[in-house]
Length: 123
Length: 123
DNA sequence: TTTAAATTCCACCTAAAGATAGTATTTGAA
DNA sequence: TTCAAATACTATCTTTAGGTGGAATTTAAA
Image (cartoon, rainbow over all chains, first blue to last red; front, side):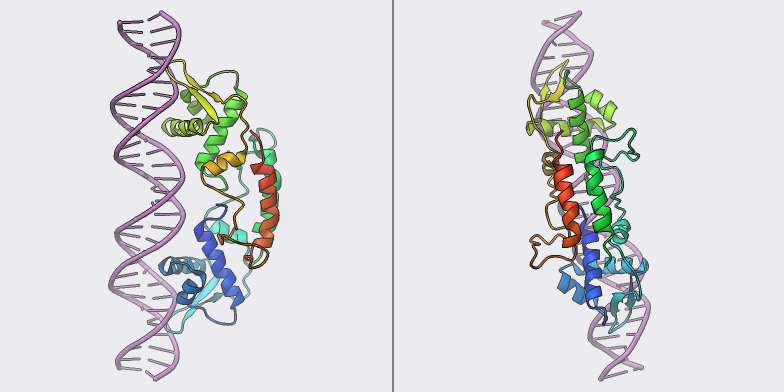
C-alpha cells in the first residue's frame, strides 16, 4: 500500500497522543486502543522518542506524550521509514523533462497532490 | 515506494514491448535493455503471459510480444501484485465520511489524482 | 525500603518480496 | 536428424518488514 504498516502505526500513535495531550499514555493503553501488537509498539515508541517527536517518562506511572511544542508533518514520519514519494515512480532516479520515464506526465499531478495535501498535513 | 519492484519491472516490460510491437523480443534482450535480473524477469514474463497481457513463442527464435489488440491500464498491473490505492490510507478498511480517519480529507485529492491520472494511464 | 508497573535493551522468529539455480521442454534452421 | 537458443517449471536462497520474548532498568507510591 501507499503507507507501510510501521508508518500507519506511527501516525496513529501520534494522532492519539495529540488528542490526549493533557496526560501521559502508557504503551499498554496505546496497544489496546490502537490495536497494535504491544512489543512492536514499544519498538516504534522508542524510535519516535529518539527522533524527538515524543517524550517518555520511565518507571511506574510513566508513559508517553507529544514533545512540548513539536511540529510534525506526515512527511517526517514517512521519511523515518525511508520512503520518498518525490522520486520517479518507475524507480529511474533522475527523471526530468528530458529523458523522462513513460509515466512521468501521469505521475505529475498525483505527486503534487500527495506532497501538498498528504505529506504537508501537520499532526 | 509507491510501486514495488515487480510492478515497476512489469510496466517497463510492457512499455518496451509496446515500443517494439513489430517483432518478438527475447527475455535475454529484455534483461539487458531494461536491466532486470534475467531469472526474475522470466518469472514476471510467465505471469504476464498467463494473465494474457502478452504472448510467448517458444523454442529457438521465440520470444515475447504484446497480445494482439489488448488494452492494459497501469491499474491492471498494480492489481496483479495485490496493491490497491483506493483503500483507506491509514489501513482502516471502511473509512467513509462518518467515522473517517484523521488523514481522510488530506488523502482525498491525491487519491483522486492517482486513480484518474496514474492508474487510468493506458499502456 | 520494598515493590508493582512502567520503559529500555538485545536477541530472535516469521512471512513476504526479491532474486537465483538447475533442469526440462520446445522449436526451426542447418 | 541434430542442435543451439529460446521458454517453462520447480525448488531454493537472501533480504527486509513485521512481530515476539525475556531480562534489565527506572520510578514513585505505599
